[in-house]
Image (cartoon, rainbow, N blue to C red; front, side):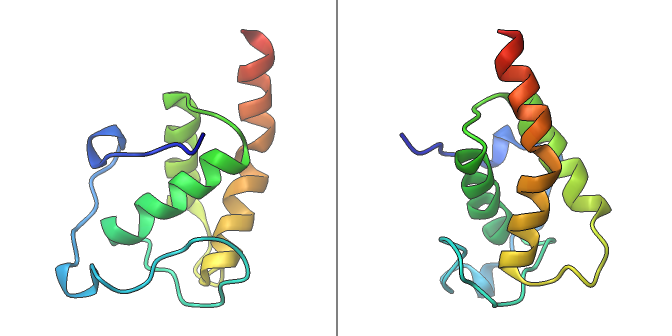
Length: 101
């Protein structure tokens, strides 16, 4: 079952760029389109895809993904590059949380 993230689930606040709201968003690879990490309408679908990929629904994992997004270098700028970096960065953490339960 796909995870659904609401803006209230996020640790950080992101601007809502309403002029871009109706543009296509990340829905899987390949996606070489540029990623706007400062747009709520971009980050929510990205975090949903990442959380589904690592098979986690835990708030701590989502927060770790948000923190990692803020630390990614600016040359990681396409949707698929951001997706790969986030999945790689939180996979072990999510797995550790799952094994602890």
